Length: 425
Image (tube, rainbow, N blue to C red; front, side, top):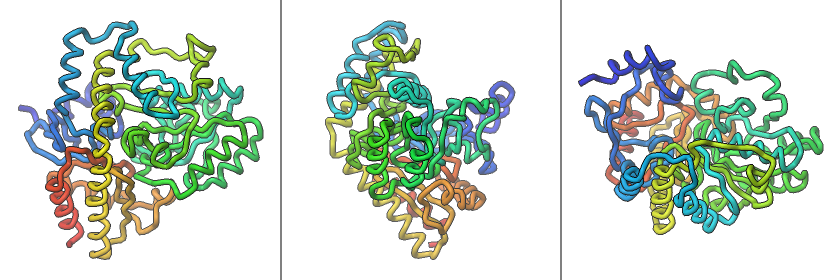
């Protein structure tokens, strides 16, 4: 049996960097990434057979835990009928109706294959609807790797130390305006300086690609007000928060209604899928109904739709799951706070619901600049220790931790014991 290092030696000869997404590289923690063989519940197992409590959860979508039996059976049943048709299927209609009937701000929805594609399409619709070109995003918010949005992006770009990206012409980003997260005045200033030119404001309602950074009270509400006053659309990028903070995502959690919303793989039970939706008058512009073109040969894949429908119906029929996730978050992240306080450690815990992160800075983290004060070398040392204790974390200071319904008090306590062991408690 080959170990992770041997798999990596093979991978780097054929795959750039040996990984198919930069966030999977462990360069910044000085290690070879673990190659995963299987996962179940709150656990993930590497090719050497080591078992870890998993707080990546496939970067969020495994909210029910890995390999949920009902989602798995839905996938097996769908696979028995065929893998892809390139034609309309009943499953696409079922999941679209289900989402639109339970999410008030989603009147129409279009399935795509990734969060990047969903965001790229939502931006195009906003421009088509308003007849304007400029968009506002926030430093440290990551909205996928489309050209126009690789400006002050967080997540993997922060980890890799890349300020933007080679291969992106200046013309692709000239209409992208960058604001300061949690500072509505910075957005107001952009509207003032670009009167009648801004098509939309796109925001992660909870910043989760610079570490977890919740919005200040009133921040999202003020964005709603500014967009209304200036004839711009408000887009919530809920690739991470959608169906996780609440069934209705951050929009429900904070009581703010966006014009458009984007979702990621959580609506596919972890399979490759994304979606964008919102107001009917805006969504009616999408081809073939309207003049805004967007297409995807594999969009609405029947296997992904079956997995997503199974997961979403489970979440909707079990509202207690969200209460449980909040309680688990308070136990885990609140417990971490107590350990740091007890040991007078200069680090900060940010969390909301089941999302959380540890920043190796004593500074209160409210935006991108605050997050960048973190000691990444200290994080790397912490990461290595926790991995040795059987705790599987994202290999970056600037990624979130994700809890699932499958995490029990036993896993949380084991994690807190390891956390305490690292900080000397």
